[in-house]
Image (cartoon, rainbow, N blue to C red):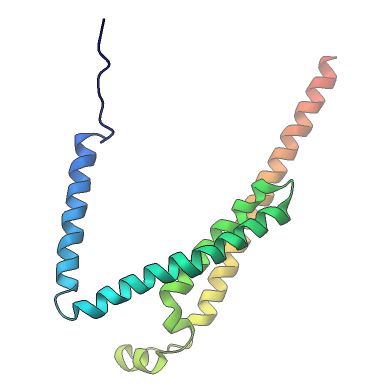
Length: 159
């Protein structure tokens, strides 16, 4: 009788090495980041985690649920809205101070560049993301319709 071999779900040695290196790099960055005013940095991280988990996550989960419910039988089309919306919101999150104009004077003083173009560029990029996603969806829908039409024609000819 053979004994079952216990296998640990750890992954390959390369994965373990990369994971250990990423933890070491994160620890180094954390030590360097918290070197100055550690309390405010830690407070910012805890506040960001709480804001995300308690406010933002329920909001975008509810929006996604409403989108899926509104899509009805065309649920596969939801991904074509999710991806550009997620990318657009990520860009808004990263560049919000410049998009909203809150730091326009400071940005202009440091870089000698105008800060009034960020809102326009973000809106154009968002429109391009949604437009590109709509084009990909339309192309795949037409290709799917053509392949279904071709399949129906072959089955009739085979009869």
